[in-house]
Length: 257
Length: 257
DNA sequence: TAAATAGTGTCTCTCAGACATTATGAG
DNA sequence: CTCATAATGTCTGAGAGACACTATTTA
Image 1 (cartoon, rainbow over the protein chains, first blue to last red):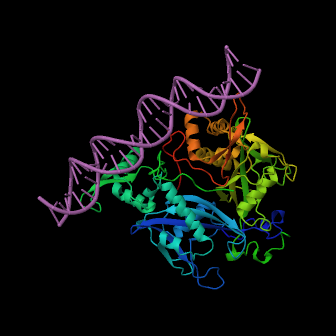
Image 2 (cartoon, chains in turn red, blue, green, orange; image 1 turned 30 degrees about the vertical axis):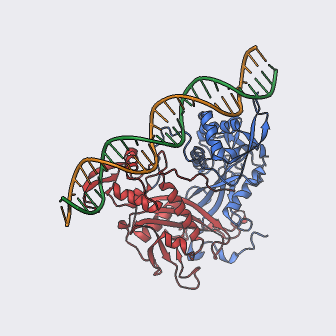
């Protein structure tokens, strides 16, 4: 399908419906994994050419919506994820959208941000079209250095915050492991993301009570003693636990207006 | 400021950056209130003219982003809220974005959806520019009849779902009442939104323990006996309770992929 | 048999849910 | 005095958190 053939009559620039200028529309994807005991995020390096904004800086994978190829925003996010990682059916959730006059030097732009969880083992990194570098970077490192392109440091911070928040009461970390996995492996994934240790007994009780894992045999895990292997019963259903993992101090939380 | 004056050189329609067509960009606002014992949402009637999509149908207030007036998406949402209700500082939170080829007959479009909570007493309904009708409609009514414009029935359903979910463990209903309010009034607001009764003792304990309300005297409420009046200590801080209001059956929850 | 980790059992203390009781103002 | 509702008190069962203990495999 030719991109220029579609409803070209309706896309005049300034005299467009009600005489409005259309903002740029992009999709960015925050792709998480757990690798080497750390929560990591996939970043791409912006091209070095001086015409491009933020040359050489690290950015989230993403780009313009292609109205000829992408039927929906979600499809666009899936396409971009596939292009960079080869992964086709990850956990993929919308984070939100960011838009404004000043976030992109090329003009008023709005980006739709998704976040994905993938097992590191499923990924084969694909170098970008313009020879851009693509790598995993621990989130602790990136959140420290604030030299990312655009407002991507904000987007990443929001994604990490959402992930950490949801991990307290959902089964999300299971999407970061290759199946089958053992309960100790899953527990370690929780601990890596939350940055604190979790009681083993309570973890097992809650996880098994939630009844979203199927036993698939015994596997000689990362230790001396072998462990029971599990697989998610339904990869399309995220489990929400009735309570949080550790109530602790968290009481207030900012927001709004 | 003239809308057509800004960066017109960068807005060529089809040969735009990388030769891509820009999608339409809109913002829609789901404005909730509690009125006459029911959760209600503000809807506007689409103009009757046959050139407009969905003539005469009910829609969420919203419209195109105006790159000349709106510096951010949030500012755009605030503007649209103000235009319809006169309210300037409500609770306002982003719900997400919906975009795709087929959701608007005028072309590939993406909408950024916000939801707002306002006390009914603060609102003076403002008729739209093209004489469109503006009214409160109970959400139970609108969720039943599925004849809304665009995909707005989906957006509304998502907003209601998000609101009901968050009400279980946050102080959001306080934003629906005019200040000062009494605890029984606040409890009734929770009950209206959740559609079930809440234990009075537990409600008071939790609410006061969260320590986000300031006493501001005694008021002769809606009943025989007068009650203590409260005001939110900080309207910019949403309080998250450590636990949900009634654990009940909710265990699983769909999502993803 | 020693070391390491998988997996289970037990105790306690907090707290939500339910329900009963008291307090206060209107008519 | 009666009624309606605000506000507080009491009891109980479920469950999280902490920690001790048992089980199983490798070396």
